[in-house]
Image (cartoon, rainbow, N blue to C red; front, side, top):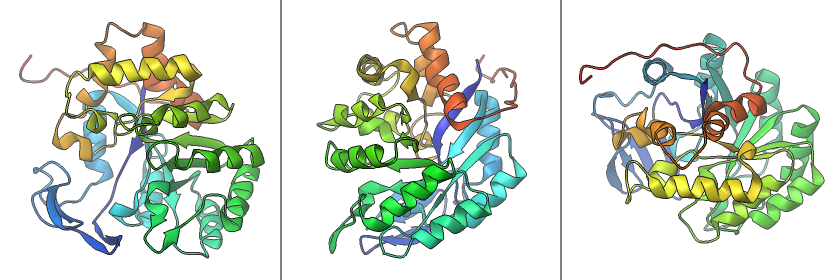
Length: 305
């Protein structure tokens, strides 16, 4: 079984502002995050640099063949560094570009990103509910971008606000652009009321659900995340296991668990079939994102074994 991570992050430095509040890299893996100091990455990442090389070392040890690198406004726009990552490690990473969607005029940015070689565009749509007014996913400029992406077989990676707040907009986008490939993140914000409405979007042929962040959403329960497994089974009942993909939300999640633990609660579960595990952990993502030449990684014993 080849494992693919459908939701991870890389950045060189956090230095941005979200909702008027600063987010900046400090030291020992910490960041100033919207008014408080948070452990953003593990403390051994002392300089706060969340590099491809450190991630690859985690991937290799955990036997994860490839990863989709997504973006979020809280990390700042990382397009230049991510394009360099994709060029250096073409068989290990698919990277998504991100525009300044909080202001009009992003369409030329999106076109430039795809012209430069990005295969996906990321929208952190939960960040578009601005104090000064909501940015609609169905605005004229957004719809122009989606049509343009559809024509070029680009992938839309999107995280939605809790519940069904943006589901109606997504339905309109899917109807207008039925060939647009869409990956919805955070497993529909699975621990929030109304999460199943996001999952149901995957009843459309070209829509998938990825589970980036599912371990932090079930952090109160913690490992081995039985509630998360039950949620995966419920989502499979709604849309089919072939529409679901595993994602870690690396590196934020590994401040609480190891990288391998972000998926091995699936491999150890007795509630999922072997076919379910194969599909959820890699095969669905391989088919959806078009990964080829996936590396075969050996199991390496650790010093506790």
